[in-house]
Length: 221
Length: 296
Image 1 (cartoon, rainbow over the protein chains, first blue to last red):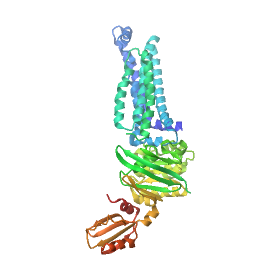
Image 2: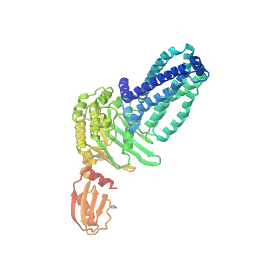
Image 3: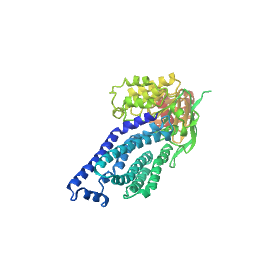
Image 4: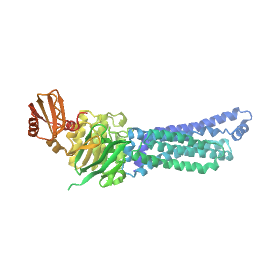
């Protein structure tokens, strides 16, 4: 049954997965094309670029900051919008499976797709980055990527939570709160002290759907 | 004694402060087809939503195969076929994809039954549900139900958006399927003439109350419409004890009642009202429904 549910999710999302892949890889390539041109054109060459990244706080991968959020939004909306329109989610909830298991199978699909995309992006990024920079720079990049990627997953979970909410008024309210909450993932700088908080937000986001799905189930507005 | 497949006890529901119904009780027996009739806003969809577990009533409960509809087990859901108002299905799938998807959830999935019905449709196999007409969507929904082979079917306004041909096709298939397999069906429809060909039992609701619950054929046998002319055009028959509903155009009167022709004539005579053109009108279920609930 899980595979059949995944099949349904794939039918809904396949073009959005492809678009996300193109967007992510395109952004990475663009970052390196820009980097190459900066190294060639900058006065002081690669030394100048290195300074610019580390002290100026404008690394080449900065352009990637919003990508996990955008792909999470794309996958989430493509997955849940067709279910919410005309309350088609009733068809899904009516299938002979435990409702929470069913909903979290859908969430698992989205999570795995985003994880897969992120892994591809990271592999592509670090393979190219190895050519330009020493290992220390990679560590910096990893530290920067972690909150963005966690933020992407939180965005996806929140989209699922908001989609299941039956009342438009509450959907709107959740969306405003979530918008400001997600800002925490974009504070920048060394965020290692905040990892615990980010994980807590992520866990809350992943459980939020239980609450809104229950509201849908009992017919709340 | 026949087994109750659906049993709703003391259902009370409000939307905000608006009462939909109070202490509604009904049951559907195994192998019976029950039609729920009522005017717009009297609680038909509310009842369907409660039955499908998508709405928690303010009080009372509905049981399906003895389980509360709020917590149906997967095994019970497997025995239950559900048609959403407007034949809504996954619009991003085509007829092959939708069959492939559903087949994974039901042990006795009968794909031949589905594709036999699909072969009658004049559409491309790759055409998505979203680009189908209402009638074609209805056939897809019906085909999926036939393939699932549920023991209980809940059909919410199955005739919505269908032209007469598709309605007839749907009704005929459903009746044959239900009767051949001793299936239980609970359904609503805005088009009552379709129900007439399909149902055994009827539940007629008005705002906040149940007007009728029982066998459709018995109701049609006992409930009558009489028309007659009186000399005067200002007689109010609505307050008569035998009247269920009465209407008048000039001095031509329509009377809906459970009383016999003789009893109606005796009542008119007792009131000193001379009548002519006294006729009993053969009613359809729709006429009877109007007679019971009024025109507005």
